[in-house]
Image (cartoon, rainbow, N blue to C red; front, side, top):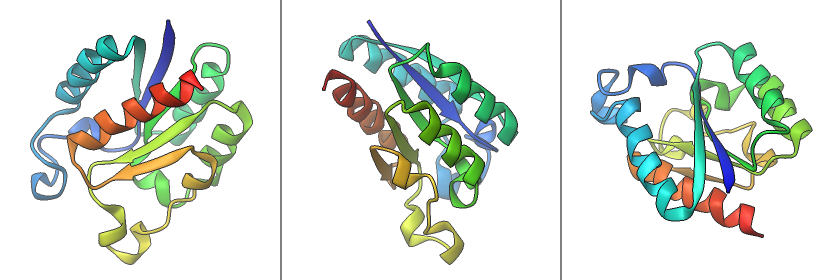
Amino acid sequence: MAKVLVLNGPNLNLLGTREPDVYGSVTLDQINGSLTDLAKELGVTLDFFQSNQEGQLIDRIHQAMNEVDGILFNPGAFTHYSIALRDALSAVKIPCVEVHLSNIHSREEFRKVSVLAPVCVGQISGFGVLSYMLGLRAVAENIKK
């Protein structure tokens, strides 16, 4: 059975209480529960990891190299400036889909650029929790190729 690493970056542990007008009122645990249900339907298993520290995310991506078939990643603010995360994703060559709850392209100017997107198979943003669900479907389809 294919395995997908679900990575979440900084401040996503605060979902449900952090700026609910932007990010909604659903918690990260609730998102993970919905992803687990969808994973069963798609025939994949999931491993979840969240960190507010860039180095821990990089280490987990490196560790994933021989463990997982795909990555679903909401890098949070690291989206816009972490060349180190970009390099890690590029190095491990694991298909990755970048997801965001809000539409990063309709927000502040600095949020409109993702340095990670060019090394991902795709990016889904602006659909709230549905972004994660669509992202998991995209990763699962990409793994089947």
